[in-house]
Each structure stands twice: as structure tokens, then as C-alpha cells.
Amino acid sequence: MNNVYHSGFANPFLPLNIYIPDGEPKVFEGRVYLYGSKDMFGGEYCSHKFHVYSAPVDNLEEWTDHGPVLASTDEYEGEGVSDGVFWSDGLLWAPDAVRRGKWYYLYFCLSDGTEGVAKSRKPYGPFTDAKQVTMGGKPIEGIDPSVFQERDAFFYTWGQARCHMAKLNKDMCTLDETTYIDALISNEDGKEGFHEASSLRKIGEKYCIIYASEYKNTWPNRGENPTSLDYAVSDQLTGPYLRSGRIIDNTGIDPSTWNNHGSILKIKGQWYIFYHASSNDSKYTRRARVERIRVDEENGTIKQTEMTSSGFAYSLNPRKETQAAWAYKVTGGAFFTEKENFHPMVRITSGCSASYRYLDFGITAHTWTLTFERNIICGGMLYVLINGKVHAKITLEGKDINIQTVQLSKIKGLADVTLRFEASHKSGICELYRFWMCCKE
Figure 1 (tube, one colour):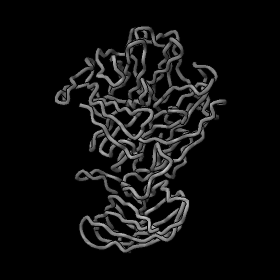
Figure 2 (figure 1 turned 90 degrees about the vertical axis):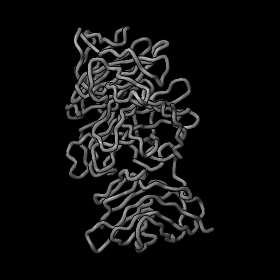
Figure 3 (figure 1 turned 180 degrees about the vertical axis):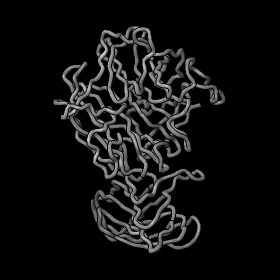
Figure 4 (figure 1 turned 180 degrees about the horizontal axis):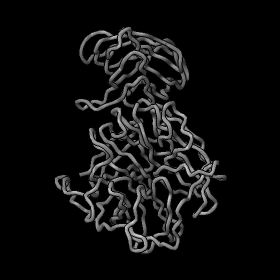
């Protein structure tokens, strides 16, 4: 049975208890489809099933979960899907989808390094008749398949550490080994810098590969973790592709964020970058996120964008409830978790903060009240910063889950709101659940 969710134009754009990493967005039949892996809370990378999510191109606030569409074990028979991958019981990793004729093909990889394809008459599945992807009579090895259509031909990219490409034969499950290219991408210094998560797109007359990059990630103490989505451009489909820039970096959203995966899509004239970010102080429980981006279609360049809390929208409405887990950045070791059907910010100690970008306070300055729901542990102080300036502070007191209110001096316009916690002790201060505001006109 399909479930319909209303996101309220926030980031993450799916409900907070739905963990969809590795998202590949496509438009079919007037709807945006998101094909991704499915993390489970408390688990590791992915699971043994895929879900497909979709929204009308005219209403990106309303997302439908089309239920399990393919499984690699029998554990989800109660959800209406049986084991559809005959050669493996591995976890189902990053997928992509393409349409050819009357069929939709779902390409996927598994944790054992094999790759496969299943098909359906509908873009949302269920997908059946799974086959391994082979080349030269042998199953290919690797991860993160992506499929691109150039007129009547289909091209397949995949790989980790090196980005491979080959043309798909008409059976859509074998690759033409005479077209195989071993390494597509290079950087300014001649090194590939490619980690994983290739996704091939076309911008104007340029060909573009979006990928998780190891190239000069500069976040402190991050080393070369592939938290950035970079892009490489070529005049020719078969390359070579030269790294042209960075689209987004998801560091700062969780203390243990390690990777990224996603792609770009143009919807009704606006370009977006779909990506994921971790939660629960882990590499896992990754949620689907999205940002507006600026793309120059004449020269194939993409301007690097920042993470926000608003996703498809330009801003959040401060009068409406803002979930703690909609923050685009946390500091000090705090993180967002799942707890009794809530998704609070936890492990808040002195110096921790959460930031929300952007809230729209309108064109006229007014005084606002901020009300927030929290669970006091040992208490402390909360400072409310608007665009980096302290506007209010409040003593955190009381017991259990409760609400407190603080008045903010006159503010207006788009604002980056930061909640910063301070205490004289080293113990936990509180847990933060949500907040909302009221305008005192």
C-alpha cells in the first residue's frame, strides 16, 4: 500500500524516520522519482530492499512511498515483496533507473560486489526478472551503477576508486566490452580523485559526471573522506572528463558523516542537487536531502551551493514548527537520533550548537517570541543567534519534556538561526526536539 507524505518544504524532505541514501532522481510521466538505497535505524549501510518515492513535478511537497519494489531476501514477504535476486542475498546498494520503450529498468549493486538489473512496466515497480550485469560473459564487479541515454543508445558507468564506462547492449543486461573505458575522470593534478557514486548527466552540449570525491576535502580532521559531490565535464560522452568543481559538501551535519551520493535534476526550469547526510553519530542512517543550485547551461558549469534547512523552498516559515533535525549544521559533538518516535538533538554539552538556514521573517522588523520543546538533563544556558548576533539568552530549567519561551529583539529578512548551548559543567545540558515562533506585531 502506498503512503503519501507532506514534507512542508524542509530538509530532509522525506519524514525523519525514512532513511534514503544514494538518491538518483529522474522524471517520468510528470513525476519526480527518487531511486535510492534504504538504511534502517540502528543498522549499517543499506538493507535487503528498495523503496521508490515520487512526487508530482508541480508539487514537490507531496511524496509517495510506493512500498518495497525489490528485495534480495525473503524477509520482506509480509510487506508484499519476495526475494527477487536469485544469485545473491547481499544488501541492496545504490540503484538507478532508465526507461527503454515500454519498460523501466532498475540497475543496482549488492554488498558482495555484483551488479544487476530488474524491470517493470511502471516507473515505481515492482521490479522483477532480475539478471546480473555482465561483460564478456562474466559478471562485472563494482558498485554504484548509473545509466545514461544518448538517443537510442544507453551507457553504463560504475566503480569505486576508478570510474568505468561501457555501452549497454540491446538486452539491457550485458555490456559491450569493445566500448569499455577503464578510467573516465582526472583532476587538475592528473589524479582521478574519484571515490564512488558516479551519475552521468547532460548540461546543454556538455556531458557531466557527478561523483563522491576525495579531492582536497578541507574540513578539519576529515582527511580525504568522500563527503563532497564534485563534477567533471567533457565535450564527448566517452570523455575524458576533467574535474570542474564542487557542488556540495555534507560535512558538519553529523559528527561521523563519512560519504555522499546523489545527482542533479532540472524540474520546471529549476536545477536541484539531491544528496544524503548521516544522523545518529554514524556513517549510516542517511537521509535524503535536496538544494537549489545554479547551473550555467551554456558552458556546463555548476556553482557550489550551501546546505540549508529548506530544501526545495527558498526558506522556512518561522511561524510553523521547525524540527530540531532540520538543522544544516551541528557542532560540539551533538547529533540527531531517533527516540520514541521523535528525532531530537542529543548529547548536547557546553559549546554545542545547531543552525537553521534560512527562516524568513519578512520585510518589516518585528519582535518575535521563540518557543522550543526540550528535555532538561542538567540544565544550562541557551543563546539564540540571528545571522551570527546574539539576540536572546535563556536559562534552561525545569524537568522532563517541556517548553520554554524567549523573546527576540526586532528582526526581519532571511536569517540564519543558531541555537548555542553553554554550561559551567561538562554533563549533558538537554535534548532539543523542535521550536516555533510567533510575531508580536
